[in-house]
Image (cartoon, rainbow, N blue to C red):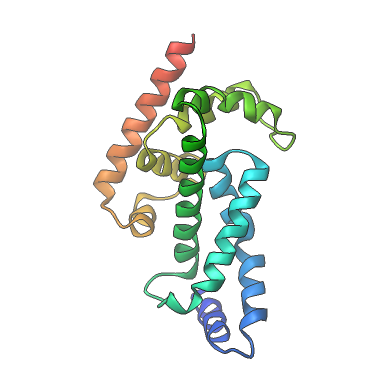
Length: 182
């Protein structure tokens, strides 16, 4: 979406007469991108759908707090990541132990009828799930979305150097994970 289109959309979101239609456009415009960001964190289709509902509910209820200091997608992305991480924390707190959650990721993915990857992809997701939150976010943005560090820096509000370091460490941990599996 161009900056001009986004500006027009923001004007419509600010007007109570056009707000609902404008928000419907926001949902149509950004759902797929956000879904895949969420899915990479929560892993299963059903969980991603639940989180996505919460993301758009939160965006709708906090629309007046968006001051356009960043792009609309950036704001929505932050909501999506925070909702995803909150979901994962709740899941881990409900489990008897962290090991139970982490070791079952590959099995849960393979059982998900919407998962179209193979065993290697399931193991990669298991390795990613074991990363600390920051490394997980950086890795997924770089590996899956091929996002530039400069864009990531704006999105995550941190330096490019620390993002590069986080990505390098994440790759090293994932490589070690696969070496242990061999």
